[in-house]
Image (cartoon, rainbow, N blue to C red; front, side, top):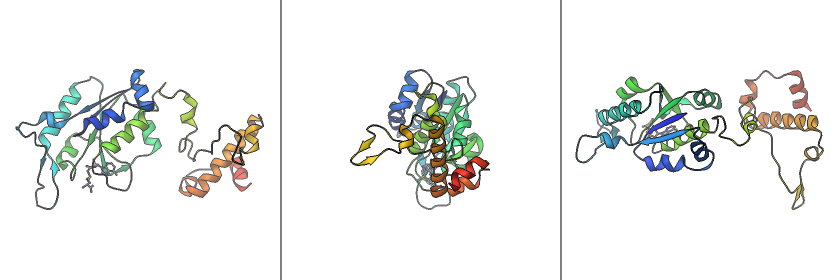
Length: 239
Ligand code: SAM
């Protein structure tokens, strides 16, 4: 998969995409992330990217021409069709379901705003989807783009050392993940739940499912309300 990012801070995206699972996915050739600076497409000596908003008021707006020219250069850099996303607090909230769908596409273009955002005509002409990472306002889209890159990149085949680990993550089956423990089995007087040491795989699976159901009921009842629980799940939840 290829992800191209339009940003005034390419070094931010480069750094975020160089480490951990995403850095490794790039080294393995599973993912290619490239940052593009629209300042490289300005036509004036000051490389000016922002203008005052029509109608007055505070702040500046990222202007059309350098962003459009930058997007044209980005599109021309690879032959795969690109799905273009503007990260914005006004977009649909990013979910794991949408992440899975995006991870299956060959190419994304992410547009990071700064200041008051980008010219509305650019959104109408160039953007396929607007996505938000939550109901709060960041000073720029780079953190949001890094979130999309990480969430989508880790789902590329071969990116995670254990392919099964993503399947049991929170939201994948509608529930939150179960609690996890590791060695030693006793630490400062606190023990691991005995079932996890029992070697009884069916009992462990039942315990994990029950923990997931219970946690989701306590912490995210909205998720449970969207699910149709099986009879076995209802028994675990009541137990
Ligand atoms: N005036 C805009 C508004 O209220 O909708 C906010 C602009 S914000 C200061 C600058 C840029 O940060 C946005 O253009 C967007 O790219 C990014 N951004 C801020 N909050 C975000 C969020 N919750 N999700 C995704 N991107 C966000």
